[in-house]
Length: 318
Image (tube, rainbow, N blue to C red; front, top):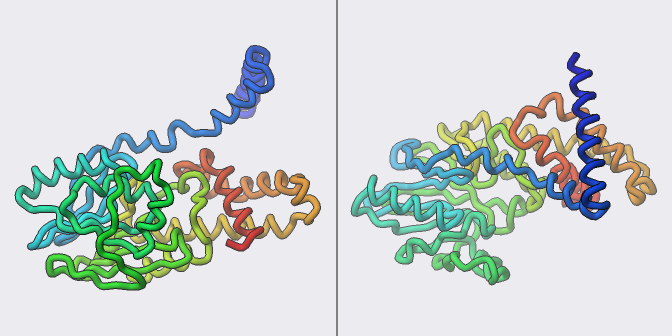
């Protein structure tokens, strides 16, 4: 019975595509297919996460809103915000801090890396010191049309650093050749808490194939955070999680790469160039990965770009 319903669904989909093609022409149907490749529900799923400031451990808090989550450190000398994401996120945080921590100024904003989806909105607190890697300003300045609400880093750092913010030590852990050349993870030893920006996705596939990562270095970064064995871990996106969730994400990332490398090694070089082997490889990779990961968020929405990213990285060595 199940197979009959699936067959009926495929037939109806085919009829619908034919009808659209007749009305729109070949170019029109092509555009419609491309539009369907942009998943509506992938990000919309997280609209359910309402603005919330919650205590993680001791002086460490987190502020979440929809897709994004900042780490917040409350110190005797003021508040530190780790990653700002965008102006709506920071405006909501400002309103919340004024209500929850009245009279406690935001003294520091720490940017984990240069990517604009983590640095926009950093100008909402103009009196704050902005801390980030020494190359963040240069890289952000390369995008003048879309960086209008990004504040300049005023305290540049490089390599591993211990930041003392209001008397609380924060280990800034440099993760080169991972997700960015300016990438940091953060560990607060006194609260046994790790902030894992873009290095922890809970029961989810990262968006659009996670194009901006160097696979070997990225896995080294994940392993470094896991090895800390902190009691609390804070992801920068999607749902809350634990160290076990970080381990699961790490293992999925490695398994996906292993499967792609295995399929890559089966492709004849000439078939690779012509594309015939790529279609065989993506079908086989899907069959191998879907039974284990098919139910996690974004597996089907993001499978094609993720496969393409891993395959391109395997071909080029990045």
